[in-house]
Each structure stands twice: as C-alpha cells, then as structure tokens.
Length: 309
Image (cartoon, rainbow, N blue to C red; front, side, top):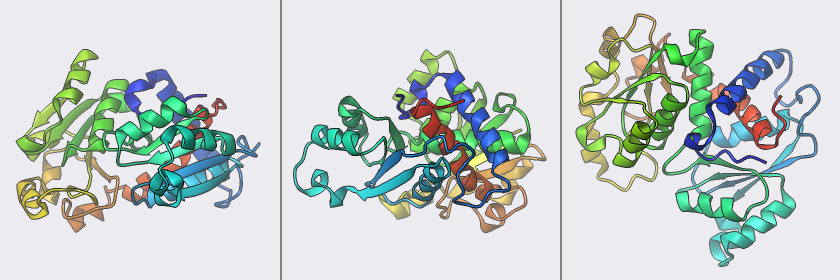
C-alpha cells in the first residue's frame, strides 16, 4: 500500500514508472469506449471513495473514469454529508470506517493537516486530489502531457510558469527537482514562492529561477504554464490582486521571447490571467492536458494499489 500525497515524498523512479505505464495505457485505449474496462480489469472489485471539500470538475470526473476503466467503482462524498462535517466524528474514526468500506480514498481538501491526520489513521491508500500546498495528480499529468507533445524527456526542456505562487506551482517546483528540468517563474515580488519551498529545493541541490518580469521568465521557454490568479476561495482583495498581476497577463507577445515551438498549458479553470487568443491558439494544448488526467490517474491508482506493472 502506497499513498500519493506530495510529489516531494515519492521517489523519482516511481514517478517515472507511473508515466511510462500511463503512456502504454493511453495507447491501448484507442479503440475502447469511455466506460469499457482496460484489458484484464486490474482493479476489478475495488472501490475508490472520493471526498470533496472544494469544488471540482476535472479531478472528480477524471478519477471516476480512471477507476471505472480499471474495472473498479467509485463512491463520491461531500464532507457536509458525513458526521465528519456536522456530527463531530473524529478524523480517526472516519478513517477507520473508510478503511472498512473502501479500498482507496481520494481527498480534495482546504486543509493540509486533514490529509496528514487521515494518513495517520487510515489503512487504505490515500490520494491527494488537491490541498492548499499541493496538487500532485495535476502536475504529474502535466509532465506526461509535456513529454507526449514534445516527444522528449522533460529534463531536456525549459519550463516557464507565469502567475501566482499556489499549490500547483509548489507541485511543479517539486516536479522540477524530481525530473531535473529547468524551471523559471514569472510573478510579482509579493507573490514569489515561499521560503519553505525554496529551502527544500536548495536542500535537494537544485535551483529554480524567479523573475519579476514575465519576458525574462519566458525567455527560450519550451512550455509556458499558468493557472487562475484568483482562486475560488481566495480571501484577498480580488480587485487589487488583479491589478498586481496586470503585467503578468499572458498575451501573444510573450511568446516572442520563448522558443518558436513553445506550447501553452493551463490546469483550468481559467480567468483573466490569459488572453482568449492565447488560450485558443494552435500551440495551446489545454484540452489534451485535461484529458490526460484520466490516463495518469489510472497509473497512480495502480501504484497505490500495488499493481503497477
């Protein structure tokens, strides 16, 4: 049994194995319908319990399809439907119940400590579907997408992030260490990655490059990533934050500084941080990026269940 909580804690060789398996599985599904199981139904009879404390579209649907295509089933819960949310039941007791009824647990939460507490008491694999400090399933899928499009290891590419320092960027920074790729970050000074994240990078003898000019960040980039600047539950002055990111809006002009075949990726949902002309351009692969969540999450599930080939 293995958990999938933060890319920082998973060996590089295991992350690479997940990506290799996902490539094979995607190729093998070309002639199958959406809900047809993979050959051998490797997770037949298994049930994944999903719990959402935050709104979700892609994570919810992609995990539903992932477990179904592996031959298993899923049960989706919201915390306010459980005693955990309203009846005062402890996380320890809820974790024991989930371990009794389910075979795996995917949690999307607004509290990092909640994942840590579940991990202490649960007897089935737990997957982080998003937390304030990490979005590991999203970023591992993004690595998969980059390599699929560029047809080369991500270690040979320069990756650029323009936008806020959030959970997705924290996981992308972790991925830059695990997969050894160059990562440049363009953001306002006030919104740069925190000391804890930078210290972890230094401890692992790696380096990230932070610029407060989006043009410098995008220079010679093979990929430009972004995410929504104003998140759903952002407790900030939204108007002021938008103003602070005004010069970091991703426009066509920014690609003049990147490599000619630079691609654009965005984990969605989108906001004002990217122009429509960029989001819908030929070099934008956001829909392919979203679809790939299914394939990579299938391999993550197999990893957690000890059935990765």
